[in-house]
Image (cartoon, rainbow, N blue to C red):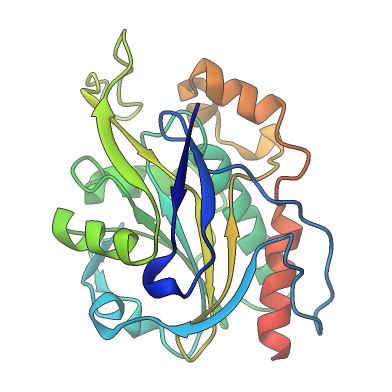
Amino acid sequence: MSGRRRAWAAGMMVAALALVSGCSGPAATSAPTTSASAAPPGNLGTVTDFALPDALRNVRLTTSTGATTSIAALKGKIVVLSDVMTLCQETCPMDTSSLVDAARAANAAGHQGQVVYLSVTVDPGRDTVPQIAAYRKLFQPVPANWVVATGSAKDIAAIWKDLGVYTEKVPAAKPAPRNWRTGQPLTYDVQHSDALFFLNPAGHVRFVIQGTPKTAPSSVPTTLRKFLSDQGRKNLASPDPQAWTPSQADQVIDWLLAG
């Protein structure tokens, strides 16, 4: 793995150390528990408070149903924004599984109408509407308030650049893996860092968790477990002991709801 240091946009976020290999992301920070009334601790993530620029908020996104949306359209709700790639073999299956587990738990607690989980691709060239729709359907039962979205290459690049998420298109591994949906060989990979951005109902980013989670193997859909690379299987079997968990993501939601 190689180390890459990325500064958050406009000096509003602290610099983050991103360990990148294939589609893997930065090392997870330690993640102790927190209470609903107290701000999440700094060693879980970064407490911040800034409004996204209008240009970013209004970027046109296309969901897995073909509908058009934007971050601005979700104002009034808490938004958990995450980066995703449906053809990632190292970290995204675990990232998504943990996000979905967090959504299910929050919804069971009665928060479904207050929170939207928005996963936006870092690979718009391959993450077409049929591809993201098939990806979303793998996570049964699918939370109704989990939205998976794609967009134009220009717009997607702008979102992640503005938020300080590292992405880089690189050659695919050899032998080339095949798309789990179509069977087509993959000609490239997208290296990227991993982060969760928690937006309050006013549209301000209030907390950021970096790194990959600790995921129960049974939470990862069988199709994606089979698709994992050797490194991905290691990441699933032996997560960083300081990795974040779905319950800790839900604690950030509780904090925002209490505020």
